[in-house]
Amino acid sequence: MENRHKNLDRTFGALGDPTRRAILGSLARRASASVSELAAPFAIKLPAVMKHLSVLDEAGLITRSKSGRVVTVRLRPESMREAMAWLHSQERFWSKRLDKLTAYAERKELEAQSRK
Amino acid sequence: MTSLTLVRHIKAAPEIVFEAVTTAEGIAHWWGPDAGPVLLSESDPRVGGKYRLRFRKLDYTEHECSGEFLVVDPPRRVAFTWRWIVGGADPGESRVEITLRAIGDGTELTFSHSLLQDESARLSHEGGWTGALHKLGAYLAKGAPV
Image (tube, rainbow over all chains, first blue to last red; front, side, top):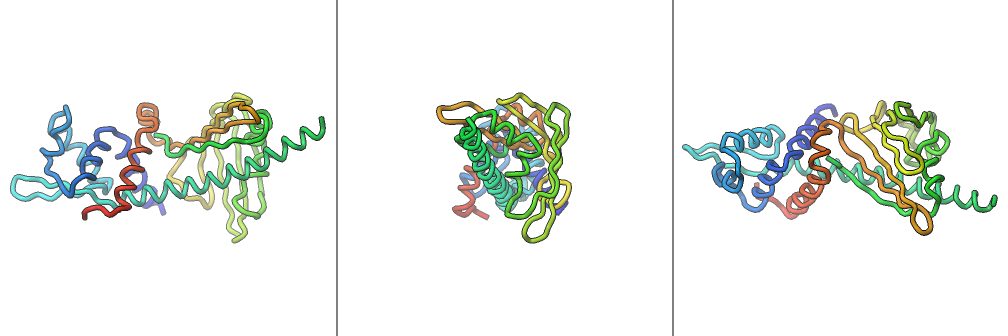
C-alpha cells in the first residue's frame, strides 16, 4: 500500500509541470520519438528536456532506450492508468458523500421551514 | 494541482449547508459511506481547530480521518486538511475546500479536493493537469502503443 502511494506521489508530481505534460501529450500522439524530436517544440535547452525525461522515467510514465546515438522515448501507460483509477475512486467516494450531504441539508431546510 | 472538483445544487439555505458541513452533529449525518454507524464525530470549526471522524462500515471495518480547519468563513467558504488515520486509501495529506453560493432556490456547493504535496504547483497550474490527465486517459483507454 505504501509503495502504491509513493508511486502515485511520483506520478502526480511528474504531472505537475506544464512542459512534462506537453511532452506526454506529444508522445501520446505517436508511437515513439527521439529526444531531439521531443525537444523541438520547446524553447528550452536539450539538458533541461533530458531532466524532464528523467523525472517522467522515474515516475514510470515513459521508457527510454538507446540505440547508437539515438535515445528513443515511449509512453508507458500503466502508471497513468493507476493514476486515473485513483482519481476515479476519489470521485466516486466524494460524490456519494455529497449526495448524502445534499439529502441531509434539504431535510434540515424543510424542518426549518415547517417551524416558521 | 486540483485533483477533483464537484458541484451540487442543494435546495437549502447556505447557512444550513454550512452547518451541515462544519458541525460535529451535521457531519455525523452525512459522513458514513453506508448504513454503518458513525462512532465518533468531533469538530471545532475555527481556523486552526481540528476535526476527527470515525465510522464503521457494514463490513465491520473501521475508518478514521482527521484534519485541521484552514478557512472558516460562514456561510460562504470552508477549507480543511484531510488525512486518513485508519483504514483509508489516500496518498498523504490533502486539502478540501467547499464554497457555497446562494442561488434561486438554495445553494450551489463547489467541492474541491487537492493534493498538498506540491502546493506551489497547485497554485500555478490550477486545473492544469486534471484536463491533461483526462485527455491522456481517454487516449490510453483506446489502447496506446506499447
